[in-house]
Length: 320
Ligand SMILES: Nc1nc2c(ncn2[C@@H]2O[C@H](COP(=O)(O)OP(=O)(O)O[C@H]3O[C@H](CO)[C@@H](O)[C@H](O)[C@@H]3O)[C@@H](O)[C@H]2O)c(=O)[nH]1
Image (cartoon, rainbow, N blue to C red):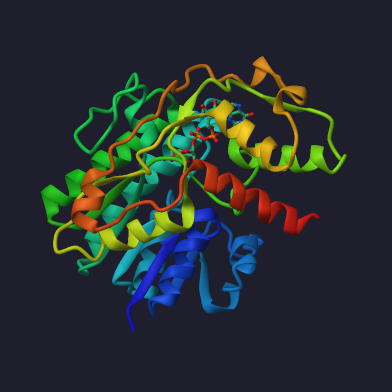
């Protein structure tokens, strides 16, 4: 039985990836900084909590990384750990850089130290591209990071590429554009909007306050993005891939679609709160996921309007 280790299993992607790997017949091991204190609510929500073996591990602590790697002896490692909020990275730049850039380096060093033929997936981010001014970004687009988070993800991306070239590690980065699901916490804008629209429709909230709604993003469906992660590690050669739907929508479109779903006119309920503006933001995120389609045979099936419907439905089922 193949063994997979998911670093950062408690988040949205960790839970969906664990579920996919269990379906593929893997023994799945997962880490969280403090496995005794984490609720692992996403694993419980997917009904797989009892099927995963959990460890405490901090990527910034080399000893803990090496200890878990040598105990588990995985064939595949998925690095989904680290501070994941772009907004928070402006307030916690050092923690962000340490957990992402320092953490990824520790993981690469630990894999190199064991000498085992471990395949590594690293969670990269479309944030690394910065603003491409409407041009679609792909694997050859230069990075121009516009947040401490993006700076950290860019450093981690090049660490992975360097260890692949310098030491022959099978290490890949997925440059994932935004991907959403009912497991998204509401610190991210899509879930904040879905929660807000549903709460307003049921009379539990009056207004929804948002930052810049003119921004445009390529939003995909997280459960199918984890399939791309898995596919990257099944290829004959390690490589990097941009993962996206190829369709870009404005945040205002997202808001309108969500409020339409609950039968409300968004303009009556949404207000701007300038304190939610980021010091620097990305105006337009646009992607060309052609390489993933060509090499991995991966293509997104769901786009923004489908995703809004599925998230609203999940929210209404949870709190009717
Ligand atoms: N969070 C938030 N964002 C808002 C709000 N109002 C407007 N926005 C804008 O909505 C956009 C999306 O913000 P997030 O949902 O927080 O996601 P993100 O910054 O794009 O980052 C996500 O996607 C990246 C690419 O896949 C990931 O790398 C990252 O970890 C995260 O998942 C940003 O331009 C942000 O300024 C608000 O009230 N809250």
